[in-house]
Structure formats: structure tokens, C-alpha cells
Amino acid sequence: MLPDRLYLAGYHGDKEELADLIARNITAYDNEKQIIQYRWTPEKDTTEDAELVIDLSRVEDIPGSYEISCYAEDAAGNRSESYTIWIELE
Image (tube, rainbow, N blue to C red):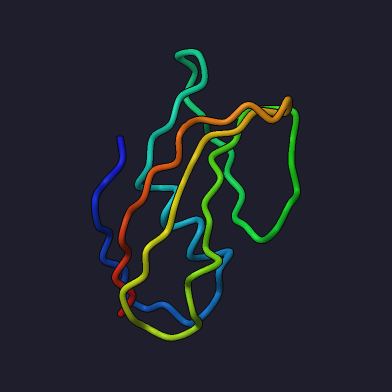
């Protein structure tokens, strides 16, 4: 399940915290198994399990409206189509 827009208050420029908040609002699956791990780019740490990848490269350290993309990727590099959502940071 992927929302069209997320409204998040209290953002202070911490992208790891932001990725965690976004991941809590997205449900992704790999062969009917829910993906519980995520990572955000431009960080490139990978695991052997499928992950939800959240691209925060367009998000600045200040409140505003930002377009982000998300996709699922497994250790072999197979990835789903990319989905775009808007986030509103207050």
C-alpha cells in the first residue's frame, strides 16, 4: 500500500529519521512476504533480503513539499517499478 501524499511534522533535517517515518507508511511485498527492511539513497548499504528503497535525494534540510520515489529491490538487483509520492514536511 502506498499513499499519494504524507504529511510529517517536526522534521529537522535527519534523513534517517525521515526514511523511518516514510517506511512506516508503506507496505511492500516480495513474493507475498512483507518487506520489513528499508534503506534510503544516496546511502548504498544492502542486505541479502529484499528491501524497500526510499530515494530522498531531492529532499532538502528544510520544511517544504518534496517528491520522493520508492521501489523494492532484492540482493540480486531485481527491482520493482518505481512509485512516486509527495511528502509535506512541516
